[in-house]
Image 1: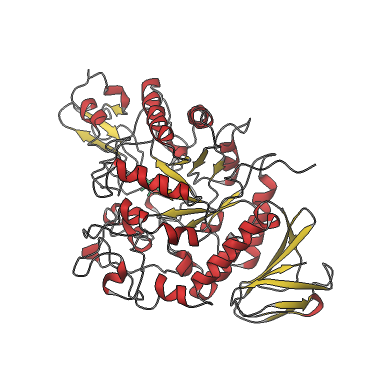
Image 2: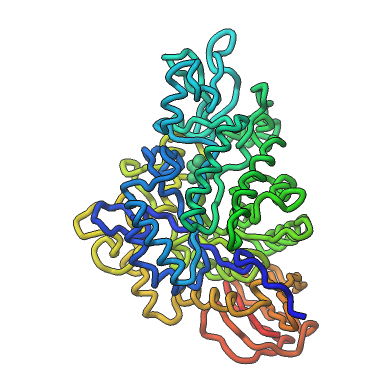
Length: 536
Ligand code: GLC
């Protein structure tokens, strides 16, 4: 009997696209939906299965779309609802799915709900947000902190109360204990699901519910003294048990549509909490995002340990996933080093579980230094003096398409919304497309391998002992097919004896794209910074 076909999102490769930085079509220096539509062939050439768009909704852009002013529209910077429908149709006709960002924890302070809510204490929408009186002696109601620096409370002079915001003050937090608020958000989901979107990535789900009594958070005894937000333990603002009912409600709506729509969570939480977001009856997120590779030290032993830990803690029937980069984190080629960019991509795309790739990593894009006067990221702008705060602009810069003016991202003479990296003339799509051994060519080959081999896209995982420092190896197996992956995290060559697995193997892909043919596993040579995919 054949194994049942898994839902598409299990064997899928997800590609996160930052719409402002993908392709400008109207010469305003900012990427837009028609721009993406014009690049469908490129997206299809990456062998990806789904595109996840960071927010495209109307927004004053204080946090670049994560401050939503209308959940059911398209910001004019990106185009119109018709452009959106065209893009969705285009992606579907190219065999790709579309995932939208859903930001349920907070709105923009310009959202009509908040404009109403702040009008008076007796407004019908007052309790759609979290309003509190000042502390008895004056000042904020408690000691809660914003992720973006300073207190999580802002005072509203008109009504004499504070409102809660854990990001910028322009992102007031919704009161999800109110059924009407949840109902309105579920309606917004239905709006897009009715149009045909294939799922959502849900922003900061671990913050959706706060302590009902608004008690202070305790000091963190293990504070590193660096991260301002880490000074407190967040046991009153994060991971409150009642939030799971909200995720379940979102899942019910998602599942009520045909076609295996997917619900993904930005679960930036520790391991023991992470697994809870699958739901006790697997009725919460299909994919609670796993950021272990993002925070890992780039070291073979460390990476092996975290993969084994994650595999071990996954509840039964819970499908794994891996994220290597996103719009909040330094780029992988800067984090792991340019020499390791291919090893990192090979790792992501050969592990068990749905991989999420970040746009531009297929070219090996690195963090771009953004001069102070062009900085946009509110997280960095609001805490210029704080140590260890990453300027997220560096990982959100325009994709370089070619060696022409503005790298083909926008018209000549127009200033792109964020500066292009200085390496655009050499690191760009056109140039790498002509080179059969480029990072882009490598990326396309490894994604195609994953798509073609069930061992890679759904097979079992097993670590392999190698006794070599800096080497991490594992096998993936399905339906009688076994694939060995050997990754060299070090800058020295190794000679391995893996003859316990088999006498010989066929090289399916090497990161340098030059090695092919059969190799003897008793004396397997692995070059510095090299990764190999071998058919056993
Ligand atoms: C998430 C987003 C981040 C945003 C924050 C507030 O972490 O990924 O970009 O700033 O939520 O919405």
